[in-house]
Length: 338
Image (cartoon, rainbow, N blue to C red; front, side, top):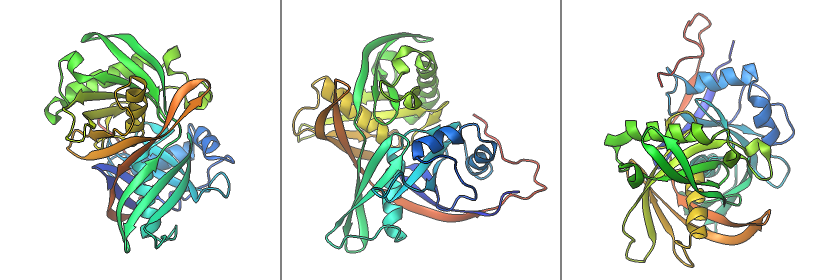
């Protein structure tokens, strides 16, 4: 029987993030990366994830995280990110929400000078939520990611819509990236069924291929999702403007512009020479929300050109919950219809 579970829920640019500060069980492993691997297939952990993510307590596009100890004293805490299909390696929108949550709950003390770094250990490494405040009010958060870089360009993938060409890059998770116009689509809510279908198809066509292999850590291998992007006109400052929808896991839709996905796009655009010095990526989502991203640092990872991307957004609290599981309830841990 599961004890009552308290959560604190946020949304970042429209995408939910359910924070479980005190999970009612322990996660095996000495680092967050190890805990994620051990959580996959752990019956008790999987049951808890499903209870919080599946209907009737969640939905097919729910997202959240279990707070864990950090890897060492260099971080404030760790987190295991989860969704309806399992545990992810990275989550930028979740990192932004965790930065806001950490200050609003007092988990991390607010710097009175107006900028507070919340350092978080995630499965792909150590990231920073740089939280900006005016007085006691949080105004924005910079998600400073692990190194992001291109893994392969111009990959031809056979699909039900014909052959398509994608790039594959890493931004904490591995993403395929498809220009929506190349398959006759625009990134609009009215096209969501077709966008999910092609995004899902590309992910599974590439997931077991050499393109999905992480060059350093096999625990980070696998195509996490497909970023379907649409080119927009540059803004008055000459910044690159795009609209995207990220189809991740098995057909989940990111309502935000996707934090780790935005970092991935920064790396890809930088490699193609489309970003350039001093230009930002204005990244719009399918629901009209926006992240702004830029290159903070250029470096090399295993001989590959890489960037440290900064993705700026904001998260807002939507509520607190105390979930219960009735031992007589036949619909436990729950269900999803997609």
